[in-house]
Length: 436
Image (cartoon, rainbow, N blue to C red; front, side):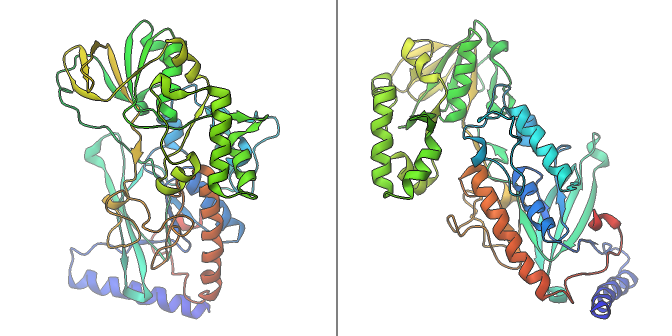
C-alpha cells in the first residue's frame, strides 16, 4: 500500500517536474490534503470536521474571515439568542453545557463553538477566500481549490492552490447579504443598512426607523429598536405565519416534531394555527395576514420559516411598532408606500436575508443551482454530489439539518476512505498543513 501511495505521489510530482522544465511559467503543484477540504468554518464546517475526525479522517478547513463562525461573530445583533431550544441546535458528538439556558445567547453559542473546535482539535486556515474549485480528472481525479490569502493590504494578497479527493461545501445559505434595489435609494439622506451591520437599537433612540422584512430577524430588530425608545415601522409585503415560541409549556418546534411522529403534517398545522389563534389572537387585524398553507407545509414546500414570536407582536398590538405595506419609492427623508401613504424616516434597515455564493466559485458542478446557489436535490438528498463533492448546512433546517448532513457525509467518506486506502493518500509535496 505504501508503495502505491508513493508511486501515485511520484507520478504527479514527476508530471509537474516535467511541465516546469518544459514551461517555466507553469504553476507549482497544489498543496495536497490527504483528507477532505471543508470550505467554511461556521457551525456546519465544524460539525463535518468533528464527525470525520472521530472516524480518523483528517480535514482541512479554509475560512475567508479571521475567526470561527464569522456570520455569528461579525454579522449578528447583540440581543440575538437561538430561536430553537438548545437540544435542537447542538452539533454532533458534543451537547451544550447543562448550565446553559434553553435558548442560549449569541455569546454563549460562540463560546460553545470555540469549545467545540478545541475539543476536536479543529484548526482552520483563516483569511483564505476560495476563489475557485474544480474537479481535475487527472490521476484518478481530484479537486483543485484555489484560494486568495486575505491581508490588510490587498495588493499583497497571495494565491494558494490545494488538492484533495473530497470537497465539502460548508459556506451555507447565508454567505452574502441580499439588499433589494428600490427606486430613490440614492436620494435617501439617512443611513441605509442591512441587518448584518446592525448591532443595537441604542444608536437609533428617538429615531423613526423603517425595517424592511418580516422574518425572525426583522421582527426581532423591531423589538430591539422599540426597547431602545426608537420608533420602528415594519414593512410587511407578503403573508407571514407568526407562532408562539412556546406552547403548552414546551417549545413550539419541539412539540411540532413530536406531533409529526403521530399525525400527518396538515393535522399538526391545524393544531399549531388553533393554538396560535388562542394565544396570539387574529394577527390579520394588525396587517399580518397568514398564508393559505400551514406553517409546516409552507416550510417543507419552499423553506420559508415561520416567525417565532419573542415579544414583537405585543409591541405591534400596542402601537409601539407600526406595520406598513410594501415600498414604492424613497425620497430624501421620506418613503412612499404602495398604498399611497408617505412617511418620514431617519434610517432604513434591510432585514432581507442572505443568499448562497457557491456558484461564484464552484466550477463545473451540477450539484448546486445557478439560480439560488442551493443543492438541486431537496432535503434529505442534497448532501451528496458527484466526484467526492458534498454539501453541509444547505437544508433550510438550521443547525439540526447541518448536523444530519455532517453525520451522513462522514459515514459516506469513511467507506471510500477505507476502500481506497491504497490510493487516496497522495504525498504532501509542499507543506505539512494537511496534518493539522
